[in-house]
Structures are given as structure tokens and as C-alpha cells.
Image (tube, rainbow, N blue to C red; front, side, top):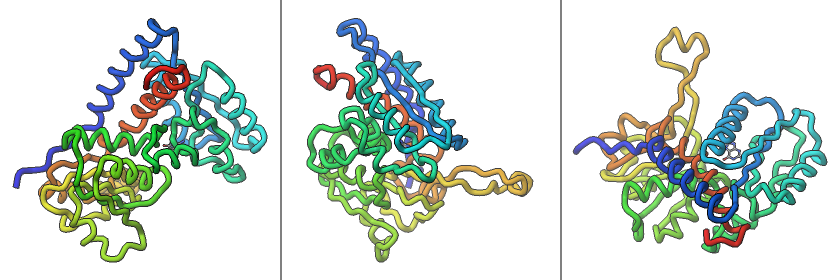
Length: 299
Ligand code: GUN
């Protein structure tokens, strides 16, 4: 069998951003509307700082209004809630994202539920989760939206009747991607850490979305020949090079044994360079969508 097609998330994300820049320019010139994104980072987690910087840079590059609020780790629940409420009422802001995880002591759920659901570009508010489960227009979480774009680009718009297996049931990825697959008329199974005989469940899949957070857990013999694999995992593992490993350096691998899967799958996302770049691009997509809806334009 031929080697799997490698699904290039970087290229797709770049195209999405270019299309968005055109749309943002049109919204400005035709409607005087500049989509605005506010990102809140509490504390000094290194990885979160990198993600937040990238969200700001990419939204500005697309011509959007972008503000980043960096708050000290000691910020109280009351202070954070006050900022979220202020942004809810700010007409220049159409999307609000609170970078997770929040430092210990802050109630993540309460903060997310304080965001105006129409500005919840992360799609994490229960109102948006409910809308998603009912198949009505909503803001859906960015990574699942990115997974669906990559799937449709690979398999065509019509995913109807395909057997989809999602490994993982998180609020951020597993559950919402399962809902989006269901909306696309796939037959969906959500597998998780308690699933019995996970390998044979996976072997049923025409589409496998791996979002378990366990390095290289999915082996090649878990895959049906011709499956399309979307690997959401980003697991740091030590370098094979003993010198780098001894220095404590890590590289990222997915939830799927990528090299072995290349011989079995029809198509697969690499890690890095697959789903990852799509997440921020889809955040921008969601922000433009939110801005249009808030302004009463067709989105
Ligand atoms: N931290 C890691 N991924 C995400 C995400 O998608 N949204 C937010 N808010 N925080 C994250």
C-alpha cells in the first residue's frame, strides 16, 4: 500500500489566515467593523505565554483589533471576573479568551461561565456546548473546528455515513469534536480510558481522532487500512539522542505511532505541523464569526 498522505495543517492554517485577512478588510471597508479579540493570561506559565503571544500576533497580522491582558499569578477571582465583565460590555471586543490552565486558587469553570456566550470564541461556555449538542449555530471550540476543516479538506465535504472514533472525552476536544462529527452525519463512537478493547474499537474507524494525551498510544495494528487519522496529541518525550535527552530536552509526539501508521492509513496529521497550527487560525475564524453575529451580519 502507498504511504499515507500527510495532512499539512501549517499550509491550511496559512490559507485560512490569508482568507480571513481579506474578510477582515472587507468588514472594515463595507461595514466599519473591526473584529476585536481580547486574550487574558494570568500568571507566568511559559507555554501559555508562547500561545498567548502567538494569538495576539496572528490576530493583528489578519488586521484585527487585539488586546492582551497579562495579570499577575496572585490575581483574585473577583478581579478576574471584573475584567471579564468589563470585556463583555466593551463594544470593540467580539471575542474573549481566558488562557487555561489558570493558577491554583482561581475557579476556572466560574470564570468561563462569566464570559458572554456570544463572545466565547473558545466555545467553552455551557451555552455554546448546549447549542453544539443541539446542532444549532454556536461558537465551537477551536481545535475541533480545525480537525473538521482538515478532515473535509482530505476527504471532501461529505463525511456522511463514515464511522468515526474519537479517543478522549475532554470538554476542549473529545466531546465537541464528536458533536461536530455527528453533525456531519458520521456514526460516532467516543472511546476513553475505560473503554474495553480500545484496539478493536479503533479498527472500526474510517476516521480516527486521537485526543487521549498519551504518547504514541495508538499502534499501527489498531488502524483499518485506509483510515484517516487526526492526531490531536502533543506529548513531550525525551529526545532519542542521548546527549539531548541527558540535557532534559524534549520533542513533541502525538497520540499515534506516526511512522508505523504511515504504512496503513490513507492520510494522517503529523505532530507537530498538523492540528496544532489550526487551533489559533480557528480562533481567528471564531472571532470574525462572533463579530459578524454581534453586528447583525450574516455569519
Ligand atoms: N490552553 C491550551 N489550549 C487552550 C485552548 O484551546 N483555549 C484556552 N483558553 N486555553 C488553552
